[in-house]
Image (cartoon, rainbow, N blue to C red; front, side):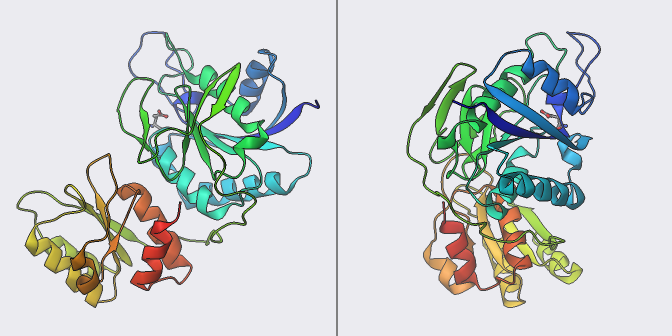
Length: 326
Ligand code: DGL
């Protein structure tokens, strides 16, 4: 078997972070460059040849459209390059789910694209970065990893972009997947898929636009201040995602304010502030013109709504259809 060729796109995050001491609490993300990553992983003797591009070296809370555009262009070029078998993207964990979904919807599915991060900096005692990175290479070199959209590898598990979210603030098992759960288990010496690919050889669902339109997240809470919704509409928001209670619920007055927003031409997607579970359509959605976010939590629902709006998809039924897709 010929050695798999993996292209690594580095963006920073804790996986590239250093504290200067194995036990220090504060640290700086985005300190280690791509050459050092590649040199370290090559010393492990994994069956893969790595090349790299340094896209950025930042904490992922600062990721923006400029980085996303370059990440997308470089990933697409690697996918189209017959010399490349798979792509690994190193990324901070805080917004990994958002970048994963954005790329999931805007890249073809012909080759594995794997996002990986770490919860502990590289020089911390018990650091998880190099293990996660080795696991990501194991996934990216496997042909079976294609046809599942963008994948996220953390804590010896493989997650699909639609399902994954950072659900725990600290510790190495911080990522969870709903509703399907992780789709494979991985170690540096093993990989077991739990099901068949469901998006084989598909083109990108949407082109990546130059800019994403403003979409706000409104967090539902008891006795919520509903004036915010009208302010957002006046301020020019193009869409609103409700981080609702339970199954996308909200106080009556907030629902009414959101229905007013829809009447003013601002699409509203009902998601949930609860981590686990789907938000399904309910009868009121038909009258109010709301969309149910299904599996997507607020952060990812916002990304998908931005993508749809940027691509001219504004009709609630068409938006709903997009949220139904796996
Ligand atoms: N600021 C965070 C980020 O880059 C560091 C956390 C992490 O990478 O785990 O997302």
